[in-house]
Length: 265
Ligand code: KIV
Ligand code: NA
Image 1 (tube, rainbow, N blue to C red):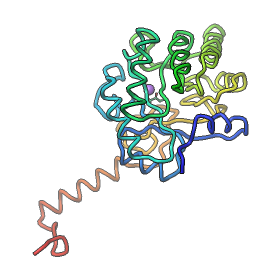
Image 2 (image 1 turned 90 degrees about the vertical axis):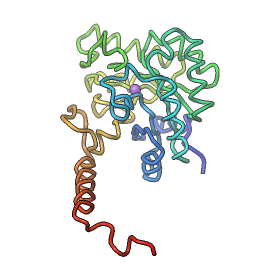
Image 3 (image 1 turned 30 degrees about the vertical axis):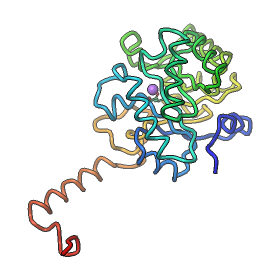
Image 4 (image 1 turned 180 degrees about the horizontal axis):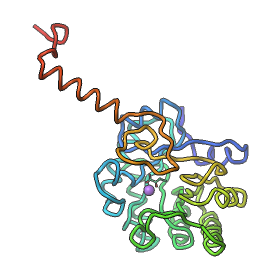
């Protein structure tokens, strides 16, 4: 069976169907989500935080994203795979963006790429789409700009709301097939969703978007510490894994593993 296509995603909006997206960073996890029927997976540069141990997404490199994206593509057969362009791989301009996106497409095998920025990324999005690479845009809170923007709600107040609407229209005009809205007021995200023809993918953007995305380690309860308000935990993997690791350690220390059935003669 073929993979979900960018066209399928557009048709879902016409039909008024909502869809889920999860991040994935490795083949095994991606295969679980693929079998579970998650139609779109994002190899997010959130891998920097939840997979590579960085504090932000800023240090993540294109080589790292190629490696992780290739693993996710290999682990899946059905989902549409979107690879994140990391910080520094498209800010120089459209030709740098195209060179970077081509690596994710040709070396990793992703179908589409994602990059941050609305009006400021119009030229990059347009060149990629013209070249045949579907682009998912990302506006509102853009974590690669943490050092200028911080991590706070975007689009609050009339001026900021108008800017977000201009950003949304700019990425649609440039040819993006979908747009992530991160940490924006629910009413504004719903308005953007009504105004745009392309689907909106919300994270911390309320119930009015066409799709929802969560970082998988947050959604499945593997991330430690306090979660942002917009996360819903669908499992408690951290506890499950910790208990299993402790049980293994106890068995080894106590001499109760391995047993006869685990041994060969
Ligand atoms: O990197 C990421 O996981 C993302 C999503 C939060 C949209 O960009
Ligand atoms: Na990202």
